[in-house]
Amino acid sequence: MSKLFLQTLKAWIGLAFFTVAVVSHADEEDLYKSGLNAYIRLAEQDSGAVPNQHPATLDGPAIGDALSIIQVWEKNWFKPNEAQKVFSTEQARLLGQYISLGLSKATPGQDIIFALARSDKGFLSVMRELSYTSGRAFFANGKLNMIIGEYRRLPDKFQERANASSGIAETRIYLAHGKRTKPSDFTMAVVTGEGIDTHTVGGGKRRDWFEIDIKQAAASLAAR
Image (cartoon, rainbow, N blue to C red; front, side, top):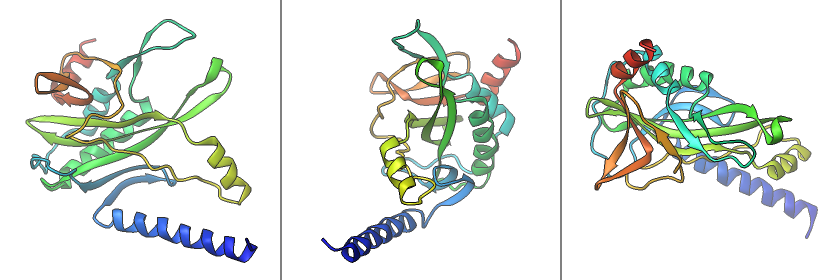
């Protein structure tokens, strides 16, 4: 197979991915963006959704405070189970700021989708590990709703090395944003509390879907 053919094939594949990205983002509006993989943006609701109560006015810092106290139980082989925050301090701050902005301008047929990175201690706490959490947020039934699509997903190191060898500095990661109609793979036990609960469907709980009474959660945090 000739070198020219391989170069042409790579170019066409790249163009195809670019075209898909452009089309899929045609009706979206970035509220925040950093690099290829970190963003908060307005987008159409997922299919079959009931219209949201948008636009809505919610305080950004209060949203951030509420998100910062959502915790899960995550099993770890090397240490006892501990409650861990779903969002880092910086993730919660960014989400609070830009969800507030997005809700103020969103239509009933729009959600806010997001993907944000965080850096934590990795294997045996020797190196720091970058991961991504993605999802969608919307205001309905008087509460902020948030569905987790992917939680602390790790980049593909092999793909990153392959791209780096070709001079590509950053590798795009395609992240799911969660759906109203189907639970994601986020199945850890959520530590619910005052103002924070998980969505009930058919008598069962959706662990990937949070319902947050912002004022109640903020008041609970202030009382601690």
